[in-house]
Image 1 (tube, one colour):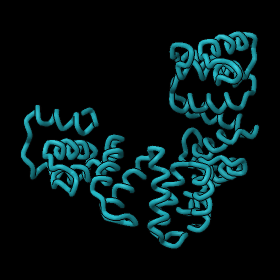
Image 2 (tube, rainbow, N blue to C red; image 1 turned 90 degrees about the horizontal axis):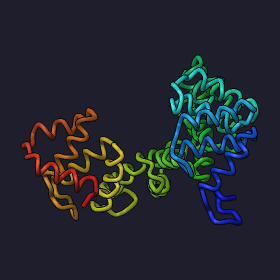
Image 3 (cartoon, rainbow, N blue to C red; image 1 turned 90 degrees about the vertical axis):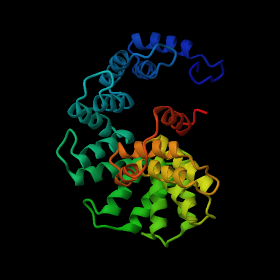
Image 4 (cartoon, rainbow, N blue to C red; image 1 turned 135 degrees about the vertical axis):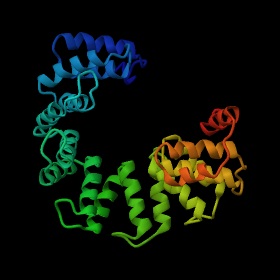
Length: 309
């Protein structure tokens, strides 16, 4: 109640104290909640080791949420040394009890051969179990399975069906992938307007590939009037997240002074260098043909590029 503010003033510190009282008495759900609060630093100083210990206590009592969360902690090395075999074991414990997130995660481990031998059949089976419960990550993954023909015959129509299920429920990756299918006319009739709409939904969730795709559409005038300002805005969002092609395109726009985008060689150099550090060959070629800027100019470019002015 204190954590969510249900019927009382929201107070994370009070919530932590009540969870702690219940947790020390062995209440598994409270132990799990306490662990999550320690990991996120909610109502208490962040402590991933304490987080692991409390989540482990809950998982050992059979709490499936905790078992799945513990799998994530082992897989990522949060609060405990990374151990993908242990991660799979905890995912499996939760998955066989019907935890949809664990089923999806276990499917990914089988698909990629992490902690278990690679097995597309097992991966797809766990995805299907999770999709039966409406788990959107598994729905999207099953779409990828059908799009690429991994362990099943390639079927773009089925891929779109699964992408759409997840996209409607708000899964950003599925929204982007469905946009790509409309963009290319794969599994659905080619439709740039639909592509733009699904990219927009994914981009609104900061999905970097969708942000880049919107930049391209505005830059080329696909489904919307050509708009260099909006293109540069979406490229900027993707570039800040590390998308190399967005960084390169942003550099081009600043170098050329695209309509509505002021010409700025220092910013162009800044983004070319960012892209080149990620082995973008186009950016490397640009840098070979551009003069070096003094450090003060590049520092100005960095501040503007990161939106600090």
